[in-house]
Length: 477
Image (tube, rainbow, N blue to C red; front, side, top):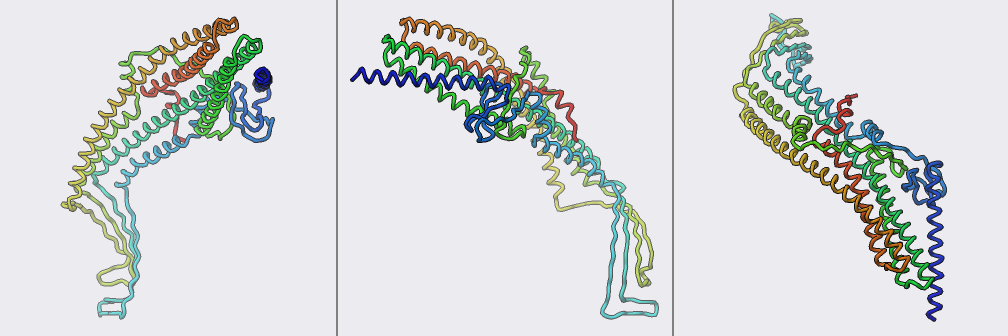
């Protein structure tokens, strides 16, 4: 009975291995033909890009050919600059801020007012000298020209400062949007690399299952070796499925940021590595103090509060206004002549307005102090950001060196143990343990490699020089 069960189990594993091999051959054939035919949708599941990375399917039909968009990081930057909503919002804020200086100058502009009246009494009253109360129709035009208004000058300077601050905030937004594209782009590349490692792990697990089955059929290995190898295959398959879904999510996130549309296959081009020369942190701190737009906006906020304070103080000064008016009335009366004009100059002196100006003076003074404290706090935060980014790059650079050596050692160790297992001097547990260590090391290397590139660019972001050429060339359409 035991012999029959052993024979049935061997037959089952034999055909299972052959099916897995056939599936691997089919998948390899699809990957090989993908560059020539775009992306192929298999059973409505996932599409495979020319780079050998499966993407979410765009249709349900089997064997449907869909177009693959080749996307470089530079192209992604240009597309984000043209379509991102946050950048468009920043454009509109700059346009609004540009109106503030003109709004301040309107206080010295002339004002033209027209009035029309019609009066009808119950009874007309007429004296020997003319009508006193009668039906009258009148119209008038009044022109008022402010001559002196001291609130104009601080208001105009406040408007210019606001326009400059909006422009700096717009550049800061553009820089952050471009870095967001960088993070999404490299995250997709990282998921592709992890997916490729999972494929390699699945292939190695299948090879180990085949070897264990052959040794079991030859009677030199136990059933435990086959079962342990089978568990490794299923674990590798599960990891492959999970990371495939993570890759789909990363692609959809990148497509959403670039406004491409979901479930569109993308072929990403690996960008060139950034310069690895790490300058001293003191140099980076000095650069951040000069280049960070958010710090400049915070410094401008102090000047804006000062101008608001001066604007309130200028309300205590007198206001001089010239006025001219012309009136037409029918019928003409003794005291009101038809087509009669008057002109004059008025001095308006606000002595007391309920104490609101005094409250505004205190409020703007407090705002100036608060803006100064916020600028100091932001400067400290920027220093921490620069130091953390610098240490992150330094750590990842050293980590990559050790990971490359670790992967090379694990690969050599795995080959040696597999040969020893064939010779019978090593156990399947040893091979399974080393295989797990190899896959872990490869995954870490793929992850840290892409994270290192993001860390280099993050260091440029916190110092305010990331994509400086693109940021400076931007113009308000």
